[in-house]
Length: 69
Length: 224
Image (cartoon, rainbow over all chains, first blue to last red; front, side):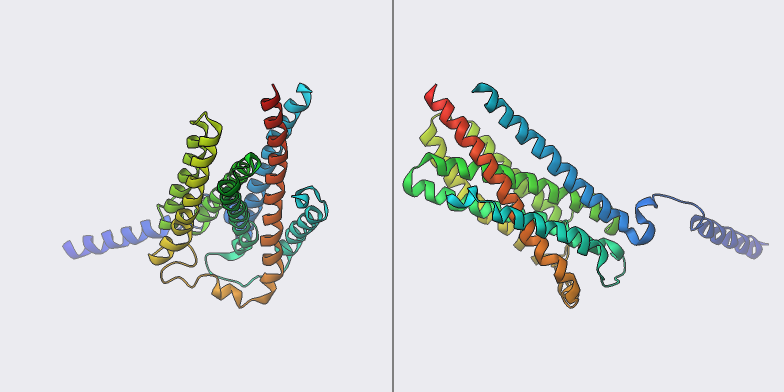
C-alpha cells in the first residue's frame, strides 16, 4: 500500500510538471515570437523615441533663445 | 571649428544610419541559441555606446584645451558633449535592459556590466551636479574640466575593463566568447561598421547643435 501510494504520488508529481510545461499556456511570449525579432523592433523604437524627445527638448531651448531676440 | 558648420558629414551620418536600418534588419545573421534574431540588436544597442564614447572623448579633448588656454568656448563645448553623451548613455542602458530581459531573463540582474555601467552613469551625473554648484565661472570651468578628465578613464575602466575580468553575462566577459563568434560572419560587418560610424557622427552632430545654442545663450548672458 505504501509503495502504491508512493508511485501514485510520483505520478501525480510528474503530472504537475507536465502541466507546468503546458505549451498552450501563453506567458510573456509576445516579444519572444518569431525568433525574438520584436525585441529588435522595441530597441529601435526606444532609440528613436528617445532621440525624438531629445530633439524636441533642444528645439524648445532654441525657441526660447529666438523669442528673446 | 569650421567643421561643425559643414553639412557633408551630417549627410554621411544620416545615410550610414539609414543604411543600417535596412541592411541590419534584412541581411543574413548567424543562428545562435537564446539570441535568435535579437543578435540584430548589435546594430542598434552597441552603436549607442560608440556614440557616447565619441562625444566623451571629444569632451575630454576640450577640457584639456580649456585648461591650456582658458577659453570659455572650450568649457562650453566640453559640457555640451557630456550632456549629449549622457543621453546616448541612457539609450544604451535602456536598450541593453530590454535585450537582457529576453536573453538573460531579467531587465536588471545585477550583472557586473550593468552595475558598473550604472556607477559610471552616476559618475557623469555628478559632473553636471558639480558644475552647477559653482557660481564663479573660471573656478567652475577649471574644476569641472579636471573632474571630466579624471572621470573619463574611470568610466572606461568601469564599463570596458572591470566587467571583462569577472564572470558577466555580457559578451566579452569572463569565459564568454565575446563577439568573436559573430566576427566570423562577415555579412554582419556590412551593417555593424556603418552603424558605429553613423551613430558616432549623429551624437557629434547633436553635441554641436547644443554647443551652438549654448554659445548664443552665453553671449546674451554676458551682454546683459
